[in-house]
Amino acid sequence: MELWLLRHAAAEERASSGRDEDRELTPDGIKRAEGVARGLARLDPGIDLVLASPLRRARQTAEPAVKALGLEKSFRQTRALEPGREPDEVLEEIEAGDHEAVLLVGHQPHLGILLGRLVGGTSGLEIPMKKAAVARVEIESRGRGNLRALLPAKILEEIGRRS
Image 1 (cartoon, rainbow, N blue to C red):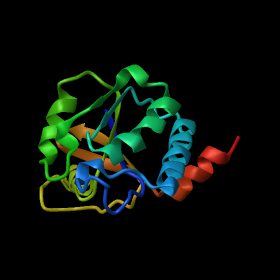
Image 2: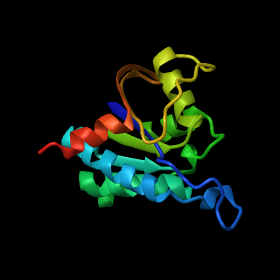
Image 3: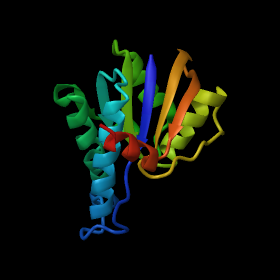
Image 4: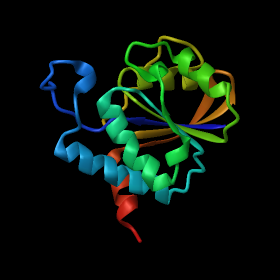
């Protein structure tokens, strides 16, 4: 199985409600999420499920990817991708299904901790991910994998512009 990790794009510093979970993507963040989605789709990653944090900025980042990948019926939110959750929570949720490739859309440092756990095989290692960056991990066994790609948003946007 492959895991694709996508950190949400640039979001406003503070929501009008004052609640962190309500923070929206900035106009540049929306544009970047769309460009990254086009680039990801051009890679033809074989993703068959998209899981996103229920926080607004993650959902807004996931939606263009879901559309570009044609996965409207294979998209759901999960609290296991909320900031502060343990990486094992989302790994357990993924293992409960039968998927070839899963895209996880969430937040830093959670995704960086998950990536560090998968690549390092132990907790305590964080591999930071920039906004709208994508990592591809080939899973070897439960909680262990090989990092196959770490793609900055600009690279994916460029891939998406090519015809």
